[in-house]
Image (cartoon, rainbow, N blue to C red; front, side, top):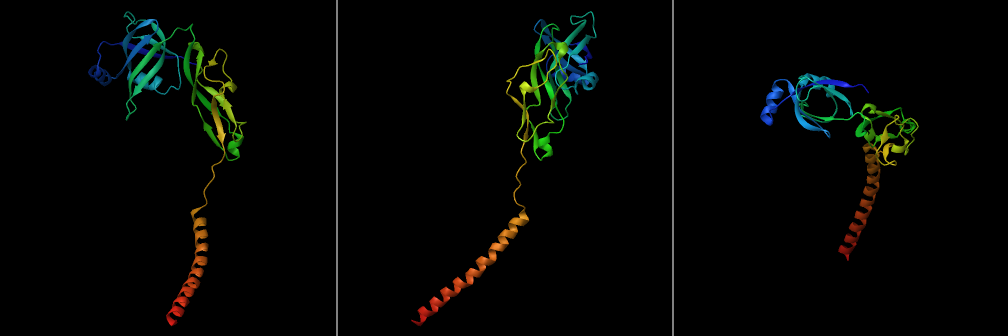
Length: 230
């Protein structure tokens, strides 16, 4: 996986007002933290976030380079984006959390699944149904896969791929249950009879009922007339 490089700036203001001023100035507020460091308030140019981070899928190793080398956060740090908050309407990135990692220690990360091939069950009319879109794995930060491919070509209707069947890169280990289903092929849905056919069936039933009605009516009328004569 390629490493993305981002320049960070230190910041001191906190609160919603300071964050709004920072965004108006073209920067995204963020926080840099990790198990071996004190959390630090940082900012990243909005253009860098949108062009280099916003489109990333899964977990990516990122090199943070300080714009103030002599400051408390000077030098380079290897991090993961743990969270990226977006505006619910515009989708604009509002805040970013950077988690500093130790390149020599394994960690748990989420990796997206890419389903490839056309299942034979789909060709037969079935429906490919992904159950999971990503899985959690353990590996070194430098070995994080960009994604994991799942070949569904051989899947027939009712067949499935389970976590234990995945081909993972060397050094990468899945952490979920081995029997967990990742994707399956569902049978074709049963369609209800067309409305036109149902209407025809109803129309054919009506004449029979109508034909019985006059006979019944005549019988009743005759009985009434005989009763009147008596």
